[in-house]
Image 1 (cartoon, rainbow, N blue to C red):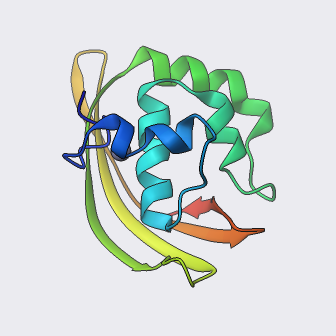
Image 2: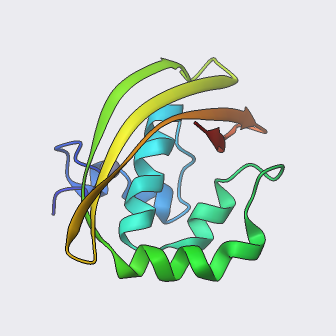
Length: 127
Ligand SMILES: [Zn+2]
């Protein structure tokens, strides 16, 4: 099975080890991809775990889960990234994620900030 994150790799060589908590994503980009895949699976626990504690949307947990289930995820395109490598503590990833909602194709285009703490990358915020 190809990984839902559009990397072209198979799921077990891509996002699966992260989503199954066997490994931490080594780069901000891989964390970004795994969070997209988590959205396609409505894996809310992974989305919360990888969301930085300072901005974690705990109150919206079930809303996010329901929304992720209600849309059809169409693919991820990475547009740009800066830092976020294994020896960095911060990184930026610009991406476009496509999904169908109520029969209409929609896109999230975002520049996301990631921060590494205790060896684990977290999503902090987006613009
Ligand atoms: Zn993947």
